[in-house]
Each structure stands twice: as structure tokens, then as C-alpha cells.
Length: 477
Ligand SMILES: Cc1cc2nc3c(=O)[nH]c(=O)nc-3n(C[C@H](O)[C@H](O)[C@H](O)COP(=O)(O)OP(=O)(O)OC[C@H]3O[C@@H](n4cnc5c(N)ncnc54)[C@H](O)[C@@H]3O)c2cc1C
Image (cartoon, rainbow, N blue to C red; front, side, top):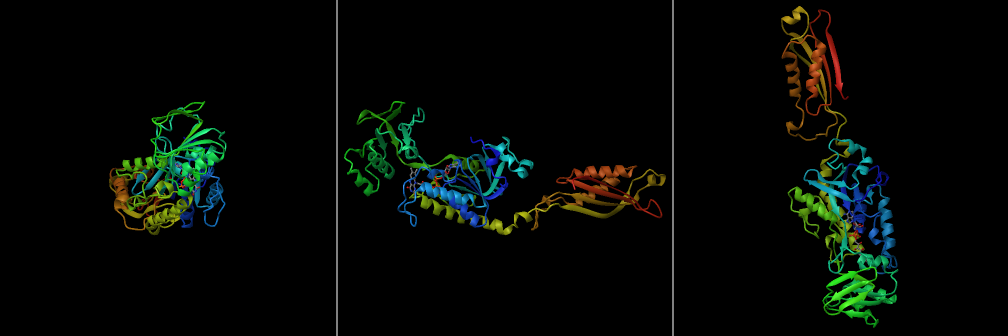
């Protein structure tokens, strides 16, 4: 769980954004950039300490990159990250993970972050609102649309990549890429027959390692890479052979057991058997949808309309594209941004800008309400009702601006306010005007949504030459 210090989170982060993007790789950054161009606000959530962190170890030249041959993905990633970080509509939350999610048809998505109390420090507006935190004290961020751009993760088949006893001698594709320049020369076993395995075999053999390349099928790598294997006769090749049954690592080395070769010792083993969609965020999405009674997509899920109507989108490697690479991820981000904009357009068109969605205060005024009340200590006042006038203001506080007719049940009915005033003034005799004001104030303040009351009661005929009134104010104004 990441524990964020408050200053790592932007103070300007609003409580509601148009789109939350989970995953700050090329796909997420591309989508964020396009969404801001389309006038939408974005929270870009990345669990690594920086955007495009997945590209940092990839330092080899991308000579096929149109218009930018010779650039490495590490260099490109730095530029993508700097570009997105400079865009004012993007709130980049790095080193940040989601604790859980909620989905409601009307509200969209609510994200609860790990390290919630620190997160709350930077959002005083929402943190102070009633119900703004869940039971665990986590402060939510609401988003109308959610984009998963969480990429892939290397496959870790249990007998070949033991989860326990990690010594850094059994590596996956990401781990191998990070250390392959620094591996001391030795015996290396590469399990896999695709581009990644063959390319690493060529690279490591070229650096003086004794490489064994072992694939359960015939080579699936591009033919020009496979042909290069022929130029390295010292490189042992085992195509179309059943994979080892056990890999046991220790500080001294790795013992690999197989039916065909018995027990063999290697210095390092790399398990290069492909990738699967990163499940962490998707599992939370599936859980949120399940709780809402909606069938969740299985992984990898594509940008199908049935998920689009939920405000749920996917981009980049996470979507199981045929050719996962940086260029397709960037393009995917653009497509996802356009889909999100189309999904949000009806909402945006029917709603005024945020500043006009709520007024500052809404007040019910009851002016000049006249009737006979049982009021006063004078003898003639006790004989029967006397005419009074009540003027009242009932403060409902800031309200959502209603531009269309809605159900009366959603607002405080002013007929109810009028009836309460008459009832309170006529139900029984009250000696003091002040007491009547008090009773009226208490009764009106108890009405749902009322935050303040102003009352003025006027005795209309107490004197032949003047009227007498007392007013009172309570609550918030
Ligand atoms: C070893 C290796 C070599 C490669 N070589 C090349 C190459 O030469 N050329 C090329 O074009 N492509 C290459 N690729 C592929 C390329 O890196 C990917 O296709 C590309 O990065 C996909 O972008 P993405 O945004 O979809 O996913 P990613 O780049 O994987 O980004 C996903 C992001 O989501 C974040 N994330 C995941 N889960 C969560 C969560 N729960 N909460 C918050 N954040 C989360 C991750 O930290 C990550 O930053 C290579 C990949 C690998 C592994």
C-alpha cells in the first residue's frame, strides 16, 4: 500500500473529474493528453513513482519508429511524461494505487485511494462534506468515466517462476531487461520461443554468456531473428521440447529439472513465456460492478459498447491488442479519449458549466401571511384570536440548479411551510410573541434541508395608531 505524503498530491485536485485513467504508461498518457484537448478534466493514476515508468529500462533504439529513428523508448517515455505533466487539465497522481471502487449508474465511478487520510488533506472541500469518507476514512474521487490503461504483466507459471525463494536468479522479461547489461558472464537458460526470447538469446550470447534457448514449440520469433541464431553455434537450442518440470533457485545458482535432461545447473533462468493483462485494477472494477449487480467483463476486455455505456473503457496493452507496442498504445489512447468524449457529450450538453450547476443559496419567502392567532397577555387578547401577519424566510442553503421540472418530492414544498406557520400560531394560546417566534423557528428548522430561518410576527390591531412586530433569525445565513 502506498503511503503518500500530502504534498505529492495536487492541491487543485477536484472532487469530481470527467475521466479517471488508471495506468500512466503510453496509452494512459496519450488518452490524458487527448482528453484535455477535448476540454475534459482528467485524473491520471499511476502506481509507479513516475509516468511512463515501464519504458525506463528500454534503452535500445527504435529504428522503425517513423520520423524518430534511433530514439530509445526510455527517451520517448521521458518526453511523453513531461508533456502530460505540463498539461493543466491533467491531475497526475503518481505513486498512487486504488483501494477500491464503486460504480453507480447515476454517479459513475468513485475511486478510494490507498493512503486515504493524506489524500484527504489536499481536498478540503470534499473532505468536509457529510459522507465524504468511507468507513475506512478514505476520501473518494468521483469520475464520470473510467479508463483502464494498466498494460500487461509477464506470465509467471508456478513451477518455472517460484513465487517464494526469490534470489534474483530467476527472472521474468521485465526483470531481465532491467539487469541484462549487468549480468556477470555465466550459464543462462532462456525459456520461450518468441521475439523476446530469441532477441535476448542473441543479445546475451553476444555479451559472452553461455546461452541455452528452450521453447516448448517451434520458434515463433520473426524469421530474421531466428536466422541469426545460426550465426552463433555456441548457443544451445532446444525447440519443440517439453519445458522443465521444476526450477529451484538458491543463492549459489539454479537447478532446472526436466524429463529430457535430468537436473542441470544454471547461473540464471529467464522465464519469457509471454504476458497477460495486469489484473490489479481490473479486479477492483469487476468487484465494483458485481456489487452493483452488473456482469463484469473478463480480461482482456475490448472496448465493447456494453461496457462503454457503464462509462468503462480500456486502452493499450490491457485491451489485448494483436500487436502490443508503444505506437499502438499511443493510438489506442486517442481512440479511448474520443470514446469517452462521445460518452460524456450528452451529459455535458444538458448541464451548464460546474460554476452554474449550484446556486449560492435558495430561500423560500412567505410574505404577508395574515390570519387570527391566539396570542398575548392582555385581557382582550385572551378572549379570542387577534389578527397577525407572519413574514418568513426559510434558507435551504446551496442547491442544485433545477432547469427542468422535477418531482415535487425532491424539493421543500412551500405549502408545507405556510401550513406549519398557521398550525403553530393557532394550535394553542401563547402569551409571549417571543415564545411564538421561538416555537415557529424550532419547527421550521426541523424541516428537511433547512439551514436557517427568519421570522417576523406582526400584531396588526394591538394599538389603534400602530402595529407591533418582533423578528428573529436563527441558523445559517
Ligand atoms: C521487455 C519489454 C520490451 C519491449 N520492447 C518494446 C519495443 O522495443 N518497442 C515497443 O514499441 N514496445 C516494446 N515493448 C512493449 C511496450 O512497452 C508496451 O506495448 C507499451 O508500454 C504499452 O503501453 P501501455 O500504456 O498500454 O502499458 P504500460 O506501458 O505497461 O503502462 C501501464 C501502466 O499502468 C500502471 N499500472 C498497472 N496497474 C496499475 C494499478 N492498479 N494502479 C495504478 N497504475 C497501474 C503500470 O505501472 C504502468 O505504468 C516492450 C515491452 C517489454 C516488457
